[in-house]
Amino acid sequence: MSRADKITVSFLLNGEKKSFDGYPMSRLLDILREKAELTGTKEGCGEGECGACSIFFNGKLVNSCLVPLAQLEGAKIQTIENIATNENFKKIQSSFIENGGAQCGICTPGMIMAAVSLLKKTPDPNDQQIREGLSGNLCRCTGYTKIFESVVKACQQLGVSS
Image (tube, rainbow, N blue to C red; front, side):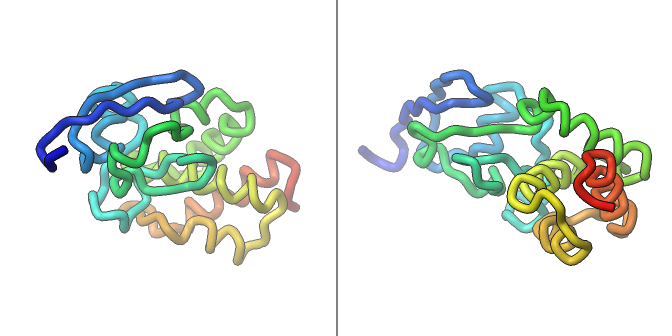
C-alpha cells in the first residue's frame, strides 16, 4: 500500500457502527465534521494544543485533530453529541450558560468534554483538580474564571462538591 492509497476503517461512533474511507493520515476531526456531519467538535488550533476538538477515544479524552484515520479500526469514539444525551451533561451545559463559561463557543465543547472526563475520574474534585482537569484546553474569550466557576457550580448541581 502506498501513502496515497485510501483505506476503509470501521469503528463505533457514538454507539453506532460506522465505516469511513480516507487517507490513512486523515484527521479524525475532519472525519467527524465533514463525513459524519457532527459539527459539535470544533477546530481551534489543529495542532493538539487547544483542546477544542476533544473527544473520547476508547474512553480516554484526546484531541481529535491528532488522531489519524489509520488508528480508528475497532475504536470506540464519543463526541459532544453523544455526551449531550446524558443528564449530567445537561447540568454541566446549563452551568456553563448560566455562569458565563460559554462565550464564542469554539472552546466550549472541549471544555465540557474535559469536565465530563474529570468528573468520571474524580467525582468530587477540589479546586486544584478542576484546574488540572481543564488545563489542556485554551480559551481566548473568558479568562478562565467563568469556565472554572461553571465547573464548580456544575459539581454543586450534581451534588458532588460543596
